[in-house]
Length: 304
Ligand code: FAD
Image (cartoon, rainbow, N blue to C red):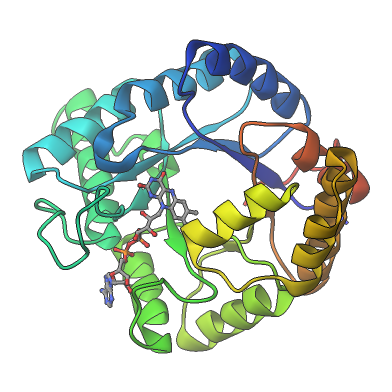
């Protein structure tokens, strides 16, 4: 069994977190991931620090960086300038997201700016990249090879986006993103294999063809599990929740989280998952242990 894997990081929120993040990145990079993605704070709050982590990945590791970007609050001009800034920094892979409303602002309020959905951001990224490539070679020049290499991922929700009104809305949305030029999807985390496998089967039946990477986050403490459930609105995983809450040993809780994610990963790989995307929480121990348990480290040579 050899499938590629990737990690998600978030920009550090303090100087000490920054120092430990560089160490974490080096440990994760040594395992040979396909890419590492860096989240983008609500309302563009982390533009500088996200770019700093992405630049570190580019310059200090052999790992391919993937930048999350959101459209919240941007005008067309600002979104254009943002994409150009990331491309100029050497970033050629993106996760195009609509983004959530800032704290205290409701979904029903006007919070988005000029771009109304992730699909529009996918189109914008391709457009900016195409214009940039044309300027780089001069009008009428042949289409440069690197233009084809821009990867634009999008989010997918196996259990439905919390705001979806009907099941097909998530499939419609994913299809719209593929038609707009998305080259792969990464899912919201989930705790049950059938959630991912069922969603992929439905997406294929609907006509979606892009790879759908499962997002997994080892829940290694009751506090983390509760926080994940609060943020995502996912169904509570009963057995995992009971086991984590019954233990008062951090080491035991870590093992419980690793064991659960390993079993989940094994089931979805057996069911045909093309890769694993691991939410690292800026810590290496749990995600590397899951990959170790699965015997995936140093065998992963493929890319999605
Ligand atoms: P969209 O795809 O635009 O969809 C948003 C809503 O509108 C959905 O209800 C959708 O069904 C509906 N919709 C949109 N277009 C259509 C259409 N054509 N037809 C029908 N319905 C439509 N947030 C951040 O702020 N920063 C991050 O770094 C970040 N990283 C993430 C990484 C992953 C893997 C995931 C799964 C989510 C991430 N998020 C992040 C959260 C994300 O921004 C929110 O979930 C947001 O509410 C939806 O974003 P989206 O890109 O899925 O939006």
